[in-house]
Length: 531
Image (cartoon, rainbow, N blue to C red; front, side, top):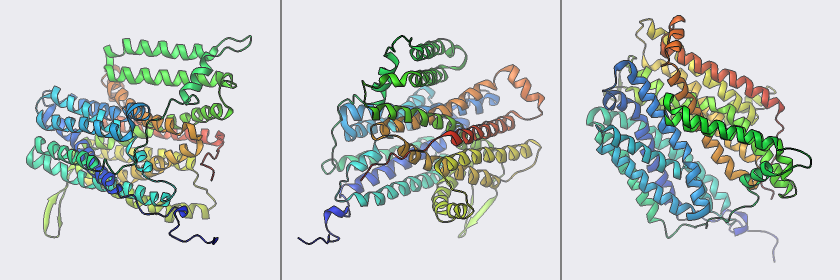
């Protein structure tokens, strides 16, 4: 037998692309268009239509509250979707049924355009459906490949990345126009049609997919090791870690009982979840060595790795506070800015405030290759290695600079200047550069640091980080309603909008400093799969 392996040999990993892949790519393109289409017009619709019964001075705050509550749901429900798929129904069934819920949510938005309760039910259904499928589609793509064609997977994941930004770009451009010219029923109905089409296309490929069955419970999982560590007795020792975790549970219950009277259930629930996680993880770290013997050395060290990664994720949450407000606070600012008339190929048009969000996906597609081809090689040539931690820290700092720029624009507007909407280009560039440094690097970092059996839990914690980032927005939004806080803001001479912008900028910059400090103490490991 010849020792030379031909290019057609299945062992080289360059086999044909799975024929079911186009169904998944088409599904993703339609789903992303539907999601960003409704998301990017949500704040303008709330301000112009649904919340008109609220006094004008409180309308912006309420619109931001609704928007960020929705985002919290979108990034919380991946926990449920991933658990149901892994333990009971498999990825295909979970994606399909959650997609039907997703479609029902879009229908509610289109039907109940003047019914606040019906509209909010629609938002809840979309958060439930979108969040439920979020952790599964990419993993489902990976299931379609094996050793014979594994090298084709990168092409497909690149196509995934491209189609997501393609859908986001056109949704950001078209949906604000539909909202202005045809009203909310059409503007929310079109994304609903696209989501229904996404579900249909996904269903049509059902007989062609590779279906990986749900996995049996893993005795070496993160939760199993953590439970053992907390409950284990040490010879002649108490259980201080369990006491700390118990205090966190008690504080979480107290938050659920007290906070709803002041700030609503969503803030109470997220605060309770944060307390459970923070105190629980601290308690586990205090007694983790007690899990040795019951669990393998690899599993125990895996939990230790996850706990270290969670500190990184916690310090990134301010970035999400700033990033997701481009679809709320920045749109509110753009509504008060001057949008000059433009002419393109003989077509005269005026850029709508919500259309500014189309800049983000275009910049993402430009900045990632720019970083890889120009910026990172230049840094290396200057003797600066762009490690994952350095990239993420710089991304958080850039988001802070973006908000300083937005705050400076607000100061000019508060001073009576007529400011062009195109001044927002600078903060969009800074924020998007921060995004590609944080978001595109974060999961790469986590994947490399977490052992094989812990990689699934890392994705769940990553999404929870986005939830917590939006929790900070809700807390600040509620805080400025307090009379004492309002009086302090007034004493600074800043408008409430400008004060919040500089507050969030400072929040991000302080956390960027803490991130840099922690990065100097973090010891990198390599947990990529061995060949």
